[in-house]
Image (cartoon, rainbow, N blue to C red; front, side):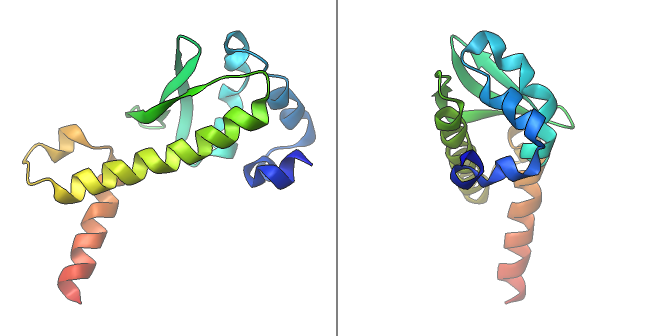
Length: 128
């Protein structure tokens, strides 16, 4: 049932899924960290502040702030679905800012995934 609601759960085994679904409060958030690589490509850590997920960290150490914090509730499928959506929104907003930026310090401002994608988009628009 939970895998139908959140398809990313298909990428973890039954025991791992039960562990994730057992996260009922922010104090237990450490138990999701080992599963992040299976659930999100390139994410190895989520950062929590005052009961909210506020950012995530890539495998190369880049920290990306979420556009909106995700409140960790007693229903993991709810906050996880919200995390997936806000994760997408945050990356989309960063891509838009990067594409509209004329700043020379883009390398220090944006994560490498966003820089790569913005360069690919810029190249494609020039070639067309």
